[in-house]
Image 1 (cartoon, helix red, strand yellow):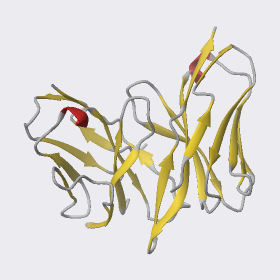
Image 2 (cartoon, rainbow over the protein chains, first blue to last red):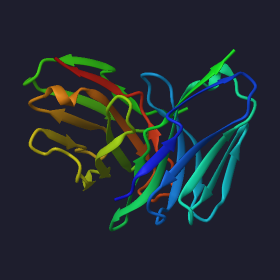
Image 3 (cartoon, rainbow over the protein chains, first blue to last red):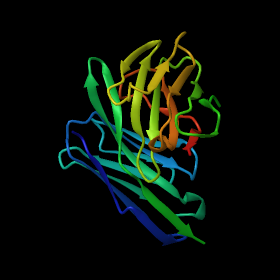
Image 4 (cartoon, each protein chain N blue to C red):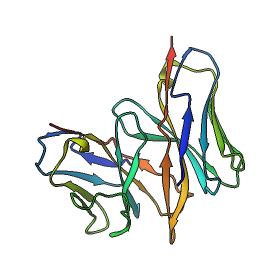
Length: 115
Length: 115
C-alpha cells in the first residue's frame, strides 16, 4: 500500500527566507505527483503537477522536484511571504485498476511565515 | 474562472440523523471525486465517478454512505445514519478525465460536525 510522508509536520520561518518542504513515498510506481495548498477550513488549490517523466516543475516562486527512484519530492519556496502561510499537501497518482488513477495524500506540512 | 461548487459549507447534525452533501463540478469535467478529510490528515478518496458510473468506491463505508451522479453532472453524497466519527471535511473535486495527467480541482468543502 502506497504511503506518503511529509516532513516536517510544521514549519515556522521569518519573511523572506527560502524554504524546502519534503515528501516521500513508499512505492516508486507512481504516475505523477501533485502539490497542493490548503488554507484553514478551505478546499485545496493545486500548485504544481509533475509528470512522471519530468524531474521538476516551476511556477513563480515555487519549484518542485521529483526523484521517483528514491521516492522523494521537494517543494522549494523562494523569498517566503506571510501570504504563503498555509498547509502544503503532497499527493501521488497511483493506478487503481482498469483505466483509473487516484491520488494518495500525505498529512501535509503546516507553514507559518512570520512578518 | 470556473469553480467546483459545494453546499452546504457547514452542517451540524445529531448522531443517527441523515445528512446529504451536494457538489457541482466544473462544466465539462467527466470525472468527479468525493474525499473525506479528518482534521490533521490528508484527504482520503471515498468514491470516484466517471460520468454517471462509479469507478472506485473501495473506501466508501457502504453500510451508511451512498453517492450518486444520476445525469453525470452534479453529485450527492449521503450519510445515514451519521456517527460521531463522521465529523470531518467532505471535499468534492473534478477533472476533465481519469488520466493521471489531469489536475484535480477542489471545491471549498463541507465541514460536518456530528454531535
